Image (cartoon, rainbow, N blue to C red; front, side, top):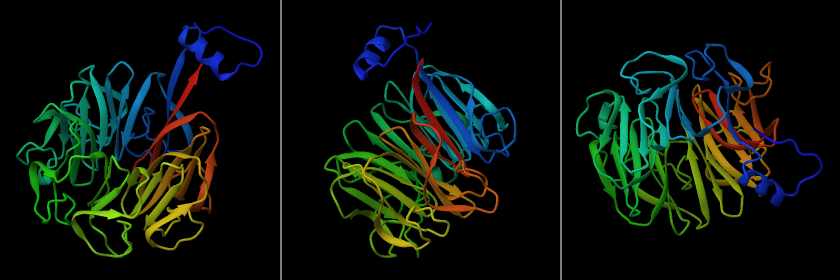
Length: 376
């Protein structure tokens, strides 16, 4: 039980009390936006334009698209929302509340448009859901509604896209599989592969699948993109050329990247935030609706986590700052920005969502998730 304390505490005192067990950590998961199939985890199909808490205080990591995957601190994995096998429940039933996927050693997760990926603490990789074009890495195109293992035991991080998958191994190698019609597998061709194929290099550190495009960062801070790059310049290469092999985006201090349907966000190690691509609803946060084919800075230098989402042919964006504040911009057609809907269907500049203890975020298909980390 938490102990009530009076007076002002400095950060070291807070840390000491927490480590001594007098304060209890809480990781609260909140959701808002479109909820036609229960993707908000509220045991209903009611949409909300303000954050509403999902039961539980031990949530750890999460990822959403049309469905949601989330882990707890005890290593359990939970899913809800759209289900074409994506929920890993051995069925195709939609669930509007979290349901557990068997196992207690789940680690990282990623929800794609129709499939799911997850790693376990033993570095095994598992996939389930739609297997069109081989996106589950099973050397076939059979759909699976329960987790099936992708060969190998040294997987470290993952990203599930609309038709393809990316994954890193602990040796820094990068692998891709699934649909590759736009060169998004980085194999210097437009072939689809139903088993993991290595992309050259051994110093890859993080990955992100957009819609029919891919991004990855190397340990030297360079950012690389490949795949579809139509009239919006979503790859950030100052052109509209498709690339079937990784091409470097200028700069060498990139730290994270998130890409959605047609726009991309990325942070640098100095806390700056950059955006490029489609911008018809202000999803780039630049106070306009101009498309940009090269990275353009969003004001501020204390940005932390980022997530780009989908919104009926357009997009929206979420980002946290180092002070624990949460910001949103872009399309607000279903309240996914947690801003009043009314006649204002979009915001072209970052607008704050109330609260100062937000820690991580995920922007899905017209809905949002965010974690609050507190002690009590």
